[in-house]
Length: 474
Image (tube, rainbow, N blue to C red; front, side, top):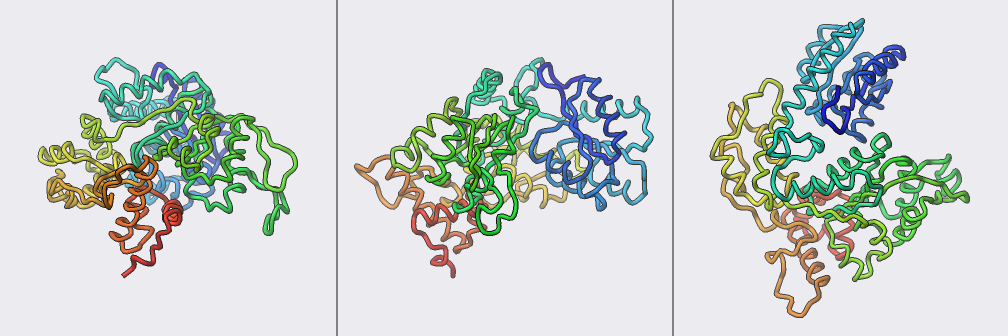
């Protein structure tokens, strides 16, 4: 049985008993599911971070799960994916804690085949019913289930994803911070011929420039002080799958030429190595920057830009698809509401505010708001008093409403008559960073969270414009 006409549902099985792992995997595959089997909690959590699953089957007594680490991680980060516990050593405390963490079912070994299959079908059926549909038609398959929206911009996006599902061409995803670029990249991967291969995220803002080559390409023993053994880089990990380079515009210029070789020749040389390593990898990249302007300014290689932007995709900001706001908000509410709060809902007044607000931080800001409202709420309704001040008043400060890289008149010190587009962008970004530092009194960590950047990424921007955070500390 499958969840859609296109994609078999994926099940992660975590158990340290080889016989159970093998027989359960074979059973579920015969039923039409795609299964990944691991034998410890750490491997299970890594699989969940790297891939999308529709269901998790997990033992309790296995390496790395003695304090129910997998269940706690799942409850905190992936509660929308049902988890079924299958254990041969049941205890009352573990059963109580498992139920508190919101598991879908609790089965005891040896479990009958019909009981296991019934539990799996029931959990997947509930997941399908709980998932908001992306289209108005109930008859259309829910192929892109992690993308939510029925607006015209989202319908256009689904049409593009449908057309490119059979392609191996490189993709460049553009969009403001918080619009869901990584979700789109994962969706492209999971609907491609590489779906069984790895999906490796490479955050170009999270790695110091001096370490980037080693992190990306790996190194051989003795390549530098401290290199006591060979080390595979991130590119090696996505051989046969997809490399997702997030915030491509922050890639250091010296690295761009080396990445170009990896993209066009599908080979790279580890640091200190002499033998090129061959890969078979598709590249999907994302950026909030105007890369054409970066090319014009000499900060990004034109040849690399053309290699990576074979299929360009522009993601719409949330303010341009307002009819999707409540679809998203209600989906997030179901995902983030604590166990036992199934009836929690937004009041009509709150719905009105949510749909009228511009959401400068896009879907990420909406998620933060829902999490905030759920944490403060003490009733079965989220009302105006549960909202942050900016939403209660229907306004947003100029600092909050700006995003790095966007031209916003509030942050321009004066009209730039005769300036080039690149100069206007740079001026706006520099002014934005100054406002951000002023607002947070030089606290880079807090400023990075507001801007939707990593701490390392914000430091890079500050360094680019010669802005010292210490100057803003009171």
